[in-house]
Image (tube, rainbow, N blue to C red):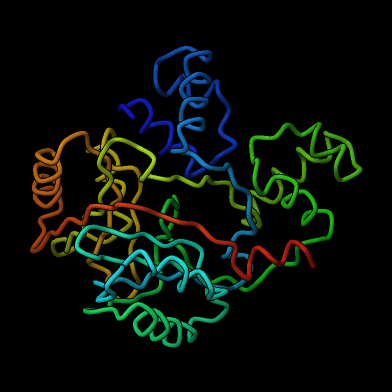
Length: 301
């Protein structure tokens, strides 16, 4: 990847239906150039799918992260065991046996059981867990929702787009039995009501570059709603997205891209200074795997 590829990934993780024209304007390149880059990212496996899913906020549910160092003899075994839990939607394996498990939880109180499951399943040392205030790849601060009624038609539209969110409205319309105009109207409506979320599955292990997570304990007064936009503005060529935990409001976890190991250290140090951080650590990601969770099965009901 290069810097333009990173910018494309940044935009599509937040909204995988972003038009080619909008991507081209933001990058200052032509539409055919954007199309070619996106095609190369898909062919290389860096992007494995453009996704559409029921927005977790509309369900009154939560997302959470559990992480720590696995003491398993073969840390890669964590993919199989963690993927068996219906709450798991993403697992990252980092250098030094660092494991990150991301989950969808029906109730906030489910975090305790899920955290204990991860800790015992992969023999996790220094286990840290928390509910997200800012979900990975999300553009807004989350707050528990009250639930929303998603109609059968809306479910059919989301299901049609679930593994190809960039599908044309006319194709979706043919599948679900309504007009393309109705599909476009429902997509706009669902987006505005936070019923649907368009993103993509990004596989850093298919890239020849370095993907790493920077944990920054931000300085006093540097809340996530201030710190995350600052990092995204200050490091647009390196920070792909950020997340934050409710129980650790001063902790920002930034997912970053770099070409060299030297720049990993330089970027971590610079980010620490930008946020007046008291502590910063970096964890290089070696592989990743996504899973269908209980939330995805709602589309089949």
